[in-house]
Image (tube, rainbow, N blue to C red; front, side, top):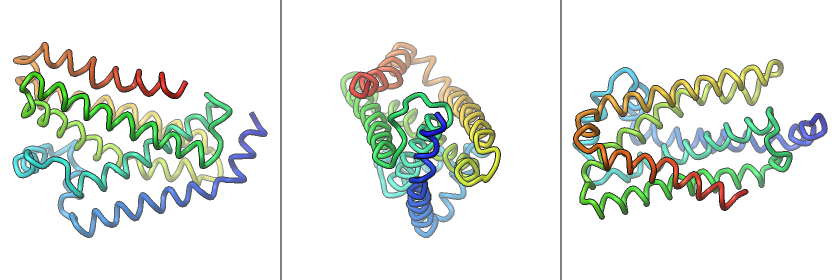
Length: 220
Protein backbone atom coordinates (compact mmCIF):
# COMPACT_ATOMS: atom_id res chain seq x y z
CA UNK A 1 0.00 0.00 0.00
CA UNK A 2 2.88 2.35 0.83
CA UNK A 3 4.45 1.85 -2.60
CA UNK A 4 1.16 2.52 -4.36
CA UNK A 5 0.79 5.83 -2.53
CA UNK A 6 4.35 6.81 -3.44
CA UNK A 7 3.56 6.24 -7.12
CA UNK A 8 0.51 8.47 -6.81
CA UNK A 9 2.51 11.26 -5.20
CA UNK A 10 5.08 11.19 -7.97
CA UNK A 11 2.34 11.79 -10.56
CA UNK A 12 0.10 14.00 -8.43
CA UNK A 13 0.67 17.19 -10.43
CA UNK A 14 -2.13 16.28 -12.85
CA UNK A 15 -4.64 16.84 -10.02
CA UNK A 16 -3.76 20.55 -10.25
CA UNK A 17 -4.69 20.46 -13.95
CA UNK A 18 -8.07 18.96 -13.01
CA UNK A 19 -8.69 21.78 -10.51
CA UNK A 20 -7.56 24.28 -13.14
CA UNK A 21 -10.13 22.87 -15.58
CA UNK A 22 -12.81 23.10 -12.87
CA UNK A 23 -11.79 26.71 -12.20
CA UNK A 24 -12.03 27.54 -15.91
CA UNK A 25 -15.56 26.13 -16.17
CA UNK A 26 -16.54 27.86 -12.92
CA UNK A 27 -15.12 31.19 -14.11
CA UNK A 28 -16.91 30.83 -17.43
CA UNK A 29 -20.18 30.18 -15.61
CA UNK A 30 -19.62 33.17 -13.31
CA UNK A 31 -18.86 35.53 -16.20
CA UNK A 32 -21.90 34.49 -18.23
CA UNK A 33 -24.35 33.64 -15.43
CA UNK A 34 -23.19 35.49 -12.32
CA UNK A 35 -26.60 35.78 -10.60
CA UNK A 36 -27.69 32.29 -11.51
CA UNK A 37 -24.46 30.76 -10.19
CA UNK A 38 -24.98 32.62 -6.91
CA UNK A 39 -28.57 31.37 -6.71
CA UNK A 40 -27.46 27.83 -7.50
CA UNK A 41 -24.96 27.92 -4.63
CA UNK A 42 -27.79 28.75 -2.18
CA UNK A 43 -30.50 26.34 -3.40
CA UNK A 44 -30.47 24.31 -0.18
CA UNK A 45 -31.72 27.43 1.60
CA UNK A 46 -33.69 29.20 -1.14
CA UNK A 47 -35.45 26.75 -3.42
CA UNK A 48 -37.64 29.47 -4.93
CA UNK A 49 -35.00 29.84 -7.62
CA UNK A 50 -35.71 26.26 -8.73
CA UNK A 51 -39.20 27.25 -9.76
CA UNK A 52 -38.11 30.56 -11.27
CA UNK A 53 -35.49 29.05 -13.56
CA UNK A 54 -37.52 25.94 -14.36
CA UNK A 55 -40.43 28.07 -15.55
CA UNK A 56 -38.01 29.96 -17.78
CA UNK A 57 -36.26 26.88 -19.16
CA UNK A 58 -38.73 23.98 -18.93
CA UNK A 59 -38.58 23.56 -22.71
CA UNK A 60 -34.81 23.91 -22.82
CA UNK A 61 -33.32 22.44 -19.65
CA UNK A 62 -30.14 21.42 -21.49
CA UNK A 63 -28.27 24.69 -22.02
CA UNK A 64 -24.81 26.23 -21.69
CA UNK A 65 -25.15 26.90 -17.95
CA UNK A 66 -26.13 23.29 -17.25
CA UNK A 67 -23.30 22.06 -19.49
CA UNK A 68 -20.70 24.10 -17.59
CA UNK A 69 -21.97 22.87 -14.23
CA UNK A 70 -22.16 19.31 -15.55
CA UNK A 71 -18.48 19.43 -16.49
CA UNK A 72 -17.65 20.65 -12.97
CA UNK A 73 -19.79 17.82 -11.55
CA UNK A 74 -18.05 15.26 -13.74
CA UNK A 75 -14.51 16.34 -12.90
CA UNK A 76 -15.17 16.82 -9.17
CA UNK A 77 -17.13 13.61 -8.59
CA UNK A 78 -14.53 11.57 -10.47
CA UNK A 79 -11.86 13.15 -8.28
CA UNK A 80 -13.82 12.16 -5.16
CA UNK A 81 -13.93 8.56 -6.40
CA UNK A 82 -10.24 8.67 -7.27
CA UNK A 83 -9.30 9.95 -3.80
CA UNK A 84 -11.58 7.35 -2.19
CA UNK A 85 -9.60 4.64 -3.96
CA UNK A 86 -6.32 6.40 -3.20
CA UNK A 87 -6.94 6.45 0.56
CA UNK A 88 -8.92 3.22 0.94
CA UNK A 89 -7.34 1.12 -1.84
CA UNK A 90 -10.42 -0.48 -3.39
CA UNK A 91 -8.35 -1.17 -6.48
CA UNK A 92 -4.56 -1.04 -6.81
CA UNK A 93 -4.92 -0.29 -10.53
CA UNK A 94 -6.39 3.20 -10.08
CA UNK A 95 -3.24 5.19 -9.41
CA UNK A 96 -2.58 7.45 -12.39
CA UNK A 97 -4.09 10.06 -14.70
CA UNK A 98 -5.24 7.46 -17.22
CA UNK A 99 -7.25 5.73 -14.53
CA UNK A 100 -8.78 9.04 -13.44
CA UNK A 101 -9.85 9.62 -17.04
CA UNK A 102 -11.48 6.18 -17.02
CA UNK A 103 -13.43 7.26 -13.93
CA UNK A 104 -14.47 10.43 -15.77
CA UNK A 105 -15.71 8.33 -18.69
CA UNK A 106 -17.59 5.94 -16.37
CA UNK A 107 -19.26 8.75 -14.40
CA UNK A 108 -20.15 10.60 -17.60
CA UNK A 109 -21.61 7.41 -19.08
CA UNK A 110 -23.65 6.85 -15.92
CA UNK A 111 -25.18 10.34 -16.01
CA UNK A 112 -25.88 10.15 -19.76
CA UNK A 113 -27.44 6.67 -19.50
CA UNK A 114 -29.61 7.79 -16.61
CA UNK A 115 -30.90 10.80 -18.49
CA UNK A 116 -31.51 8.91 -21.75
CA UNK A 117 -33.32 6.05 -20.03
CA UNK A 118 -35.47 8.55 -18.14
CA UNK A 119 -36.25 10.46 -21.31
CA UNK A 120 -37.15 7.23 -23.11
CA UNK A 121 -39.52 6.13 -20.33
CA UNK A 122 -41.03 9.60 -20.11
CA UNK A 123 -41.85 9.50 -23.81
CA UNK A 124 -43.35 5.99 -23.57
CA UNK A 125 -45.58 6.82 -20.61
CA UNK A 126 -46.27 10.39 -21.76
CA UNK A 127 -44.91 11.97 -18.57
CA UNK A 128 -42.18 14.12 -20.06
CA UNK A 129 -43.24 17.25 -18.15
CA UNK A 130 -43.19 15.35 -14.84
CA UNK A 131 -39.82 13.82 -15.68
CA UNK A 132 -38.37 17.23 -16.56
CA UNK A 133 -39.60 18.65 -13.26
CA UNK A 134 -37.96 15.98 -11.10
CA UNK A 135 -34.81 15.78 -13.24
CA UNK A 136 -34.40 19.56 -13.10
CA UNK A 137 -34.62 19.57 -9.30
CA UNK A 138 -32.10 16.73 -8.98
CA UNK A 139 -29.61 18.33 -11.36
CA UNK A 140 -29.94 21.74 -9.74
CA UNK A 141 -29.43 20.41 -6.24
CA UNK A 142 -26.47 18.36 -7.44
CA UNK A 143 -24.95 21.52 -8.93
CA UNK A 144 -25.34 23.12 -5.51
CA UNK A 145 -23.85 20.11 -3.77
CA UNK A 146 -20.74 20.08 -5.97
CA UNK A 147 -20.11 23.79 -5.40
CA UNK A 148 -20.16 23.13 -1.65
CA UNK A 149 -17.86 20.12 -1.92
CA UNK A 150 -15.14 21.84 -3.96
CA UNK A 151 -13.41 23.64 -1.03
CA UNK A 152 -13.30 20.38 0.95
CA UNK A 153 -11.93 18.56 -2.09
CA UNK A 154 -9.15 21.14 -2.50
CA UNK A 155 -8.17 20.68 1.16
CA UNK A 156 -8.10 16.91 0.64
CA UNK A 157 -5.73 17.32 -2.30
CA UNK A 158 -3.31 19.92 -0.94
CA UNK A 159 -3.24 19.53 2.85
CA UNK A 160 0.29 18.67 3.97
CA UNK A 161 -0.91 16.74 7.01
CA UNK A 162 -4.06 14.83 7.90
CA UNK A 163 -4.89 14.35 4.21
CA UNK A 164 -6.97 11.25 4.87
CA UNK A 165 -8.84 12.99 7.69
CA UNK A 166 -9.72 15.88 5.38
CA UNK A 167 -10.96 13.44 2.76
CA UNK A 168 -13.06 11.56 5.31
CA UNK A 169 -14.66 14.88 6.25
CA UNK A 170 -15.19 15.63 2.55
CA UNK A 171 -16.78 12.23 1.97
CA UNK A 172 -18.99 12.58 5.05
CA UNK A 173 -20.18 16.04 3.94
CA UNK A 174 -20.87 14.64 0.45
CA UNK A 175 -23.02 11.82 1.85
CA UNK A 176 -24.96 14.21 4.10
CA UNK A 177 -25.60 16.59 1.20
CA UNK A 178 -26.69 13.73 -1.06
CA UNK A 179 -29.23 12.64 1.56
CA UNK A 180 -30.41 16.24 1.96
CA UNK A 181 -30.70 16.52 -1.82
CA UNK A 182 -32.99 13.50 -2.07
CA UNK A 183 -35.10 14.71 0.85
CA UNK A 184 -35.56 18.13 -0.75
CA UNK A 185 -36.42 16.59 -4.13
CA UNK A 186 -39.07 14.42 -2.43
CA UNK A 187 -40.47 17.35 -0.45
CA UNK A 188 -40.58 19.66 -3.46
CA UNK A 189 -42.38 17.05 -5.57
CA UNK A 190 -44.40 15.16 -2.95
CA UNK A 191 -47.75 15.80 -4.64
CA UNK A 192 -46.37 14.76 -8.00
CA UNK A 193 -44.83 11.61 -6.49
CA UNK A 194 -47.94 10.60 -4.52
CA UNK A 195 -50.17 11.04 -7.57
CA UNK A 196 -47.76 9.06 -9.76
CA UNK A 197 -46.39 6.48 -7.33
CA UNK A 198 -46.05 3.73 -9.97
CA UNK A 199 -44.00 5.96 -12.24
CA UNK A 200 -41.87 7.10 -9.30
CA UNK A 201 -41.02 3.49 -8.36
CA UNK A 202 -40.23 2.79 -12.01
CA UNK A 203 -38.09 5.94 -12.05
CA UNK A 204 -36.07 4.77 -9.04
CA UNK A 205 -35.48 1.30 -10.48
CA UNK A 206 -34.73 2.39 -14.04
CA UNK A 207 -32.80 5.60 -13.47
CA UNK A 208 -30.97 5.06 -10.19
CA UNK A 209 -30.24 1.32 -10.26
CA UNK A 210 -30.15 0.20 -13.91
CA UNK A 211 -27.47 2.65 -15.20
CA UNK A 212 -25.23 1.87 -12.23
CA UNK A 213 -25.63 -1.87 -12.83
CA UNK A 214 -24.74 -1.41 -16.51
CA UNK A 215 -21.61 0.62 -15.70
CA UNK A 216 -20.44 -1.91 -13.10
CA UNK A 217 -21.05 -4.75 -15.56
CA UNK A 218 -18.96 -3.00 -18.22
CA UNK A 219 -16.10 -2.01 -15.94
CA UNK A 220 -15.71 -5.00 -13.62
